[in-house]
Image 1 (cartoon, rainbow, N blue to C red):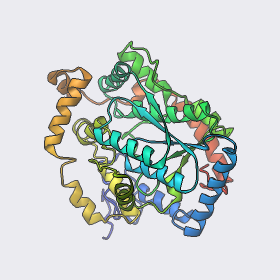
Image 2: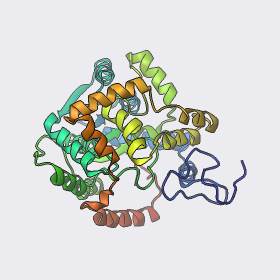
Image 3: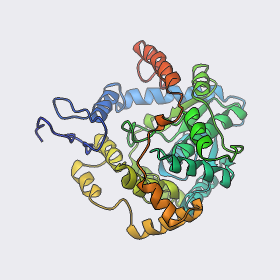
Length: 383
């Protein structure tokens, strides 16, 4: 496919002009494809380099966990990525503590998957239960605020919950299901930084007085300090393996009776409804484009198949209708109130207080560090 001047679609993947500030080079490759190429050039797909980094990280985890009950924490949502990360950790002889953050939106499939993974791998499960009224009012505040990232409360709680559990048990490594093969940073305006505790609290305070007592939080500054002092390190574990999602799912189904779900993160009802209904309806965003584009880059699908998938509904319209009824009722809204919120113009997260200036300082420091250190350190960690 020859690149045409003025073209607003990547020549390799399915990212197009719906992504703000789509940046195409003279070959027609978008910044997300170029980011993938940089990772490959840094050794992401080189078996020898990847194996060396993996062994270095495993050795670091084992050394730090010597004499302790657990040597790492693995977050477990019931989804494919986190389930496979837990499986690999045990296969490598590690002693993970499984941590699950229950925000009240789990599907029945997620619960079954977690139970099967924990039982068959012989893991201890540490569950952080957020009081429903507290989480409902926080997430409802984000809905009323009109900002794009309704998932920020969930993702912030997962990050904070895993890190604080690691601190509680004296564990230095959180092995996550984050990975480069199926995930990439979202375009500006498609989400918000998950560690922005200032933004989370500002939106909370603007729309609800329900106190955050069971909701785990952590600031950008604290995360930074924990990383720099190596007290707790967040590791995108799956990127150290040749991760093919379809093969991972087949293994999980065969070995653990793992149950598949709708969409990339359909183990959560609100995530399924948010990505399949709220994002495209209110914000004109189809997150499948980025997910599918990453699979194209990693050779797990083709552009032709991805384009065909994009022509289909996000998920079964009948299930969408059931989810809509369930979500509205669970939020304590009326149909009219929900529709009104969907029709109100979107607002930026930066219409509310944020710690963005602090984050920019942190990113500048990190940039200096990367100037003298590659993306992957010699110990297998991410700088």
